[in-house]
Length: 206
Image 1 (cartoon, rainbow, N blue to C red):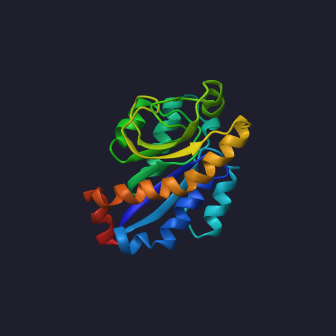
Image 2 (tube, rainbow, N blue to C red):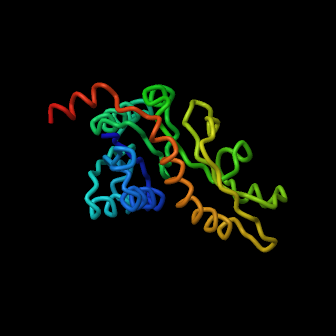
Image 3 (cartoon, rainbow, N blue to C red):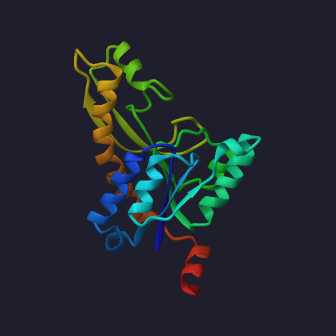
């Protein structure tokens, strides 16, 4: 079985959209895939409660208990690997990952960014798009690499910018479309992903 491990830091609305799509579209039958776990760097993240209520395994690796970013990422990577991930999905995970973490999951880690990449990587994307006079904004799902928001793009969605838009109003409209985009992008990459040999051996032993 292809395990999807989702990393969150807050409410986990994209995580919930992915999990609901996985159930509604029967990813287990279509792709041999399931949501294996939801992991957060914040113990108070509301998304953890949602996942637990829906029967999804949860875990917390609290970044505040570590002396360095490297130590946190090492512990987080071990927590992710404990769930035998075929795909790691960043869904509102508000931590910049170190190079060793990215390398460990290279080619099997996705992120969603609220802009039409390569435009406006980084923070404050909606305000920057409005100030630049853009007529369209959107969201992008991309493979994670060491380059910030610079990995190959898997899928995008376009959202109009209206004359009276503010950053919050645009953000809300983009987020609604993210909930459609992210599950769609994941369903596109799942067929090409293979279960790691060590995970297959553990599945057979179980």
